[in-house]
Every structure is written in C-alpha cells, then in structure tokens.
Length: 341
Image 1 (cartoon, rainbow, N blue to C red):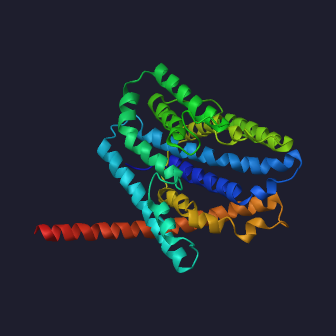
Image 2 (image 1 turned 180 degrees about the vertical axis):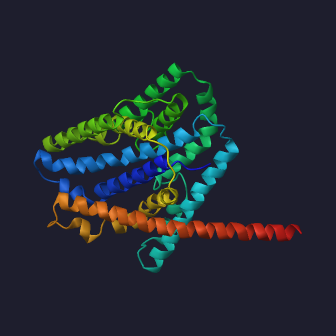
Image 3 (image 1 turned 90 degrees about the horizontal axis):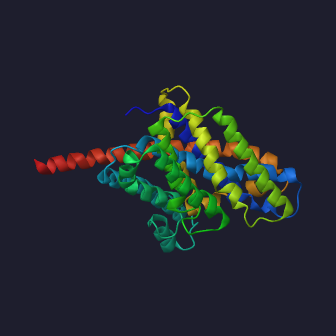
C-alpha cells in the first residue's frame, strides 16, 4: 500500500516531540529547583507536554490505518516480531559499542534488561505497542461491528480511566507507561477512519488545550504544589490536543513524497537508540545540558537543533540496518532454496 505522506510527516513530528520531551525530562530537571517567576516555567512545561502528545499521535496513526481492518493474529505476531527484532538489534549493537568503550559497569545485567521484553519497562512503549499489535485482531472484531454511539461511549470510558485518572496517581486501569494508556489513541484513530470525522478549526482548538495545560502546569510549579502536575503533562489534555492535530492532518490533501516516507520509516529507530538506557544515561548527562551559564530559553533552542541532528543521524543508521536485514533475508532465502534442491 502506498504511504500517505500526510501521516508520514505526522509520524516524524510525533517522534520529534517525544525526543524533545526526553531532553527536558532527563536533562533539565535541575533547572526547576528553587523558586522562579511564573513565566520561567512556561518553556519546560511546554516541552514536558510533548512526550505523551507525540505518543498519542504515533498510536493514532496505527489506529487510523489498522483499526476496522481485517488484521489477523498471524499478522500481529509477525509485526510484533519485526518490532522486537529491531529493538534487540539496537540493544545489542549499543551494548557492544558501550562495552568496548568501557561504559558498562554491570555488563551481564545491562544486556539482559536491554533485550528482555516486559521485565523492566526500559522500552515501555515497545512493550505496550507489542501488546496492542497482538490484540488488534480481537479489538477490530469489536470495532467493525460496534455502532457509532457505542464506539463513542467506549472511547469516553477508556479515556477517562486511562488519560484522566492515571495522571493523578490512580493505577486501577493503567499508568502513563502501560499498555492501557495508549488504547484511547488507537480507538480515536480507528473512529476517525470509520466515520470520517471533520472538526472545524482543529489546529486552533489543539493549541488552546495545549496552552491551558502549559499554563496549568506552570502555575503548579510556581506555587510549589506539584503532586498532581502529571495531570497536565500525561493525560487528557494531550489526548484532546492530539485528536485535533490528527484531525487537522486528515483534512489536508493527500500527497506522496519519497523522502518523507523514507525518513518516516526510520523514526522509530530514533526512539530505540536514544531511549536505550545506556545511551540515555550518557546522552542527557552531557555537560552541554548542564551549563548554568546557558539560559532555559537558549538551551531549549539548542535542544531543537540537537534533536533534529539526532533524528537525521538515526535515520542514516536505520537505513543501514534495513539494508543489512534485507541482505540477510535474501541470503537465508537463497540458502533455503539451495537446501530444497
């Protein structure tokens, strides 16, 4: 199936958002200590919103193209295997490089936790996405036959439990790094595709919810009551904003761009490489991100260029990885064909 570059562009943007969140979350918490002006907290809050916003957009794309389809269990298993094989490839590659550079204090444990799924939540999104892909066959059986009103009620119920309650420390349904957290985005993507929903001024509405969450979080930082600050970073505001952004993209004219599509196919590698525990520890602890002489705004602007560079570098790496996988696949096919003769 030909890739629609509208959504491939959105896939790239969603990964950009996730990496910019990682920059703020892992390298900049030291800036938030002490008391600052209300406006000081705007930029960190704006960046910290981007993580789950990017995750929701990424999953909505899956829901839009996979929801309501004839997705078999075998196809789910095959897709899950591809995702995990890519994860293991990068985990082992990074481990070997880091080990040779003397950057691993406990080699055996680092390797085990990097490649074993569902054990340490180091790659929480990979684990959650694999569960989703394996369950898609059964989810779609429901979504194909459900009526519109029941579909809407299902989205509301799941969204309340996953995106409204979990950010205020209720784990009765899920938390922000579990499978249940991404279910609402999948359902919304499938709902948009099934009923061809079209909102008026969706981008403006998305910006309003994004701004409300940014200001709300900044106020909590300012007054020093941050117990429930995740309500503004990891929940319903991001889900609503993502829904409007996705709907905005839906309303654009479809187009195809080979360059965009190639980059979009590789963006998952940006996550696998930079969110690897070894890389994350080394990358976000770099002195550059802890320079007290550099203001929050200056560092935030620099981070944008760094994230773009990281994504370009990861694209080049993943193109090589895809070429290697393709070569090995042809070799195995040739060997099997030779044995059968």
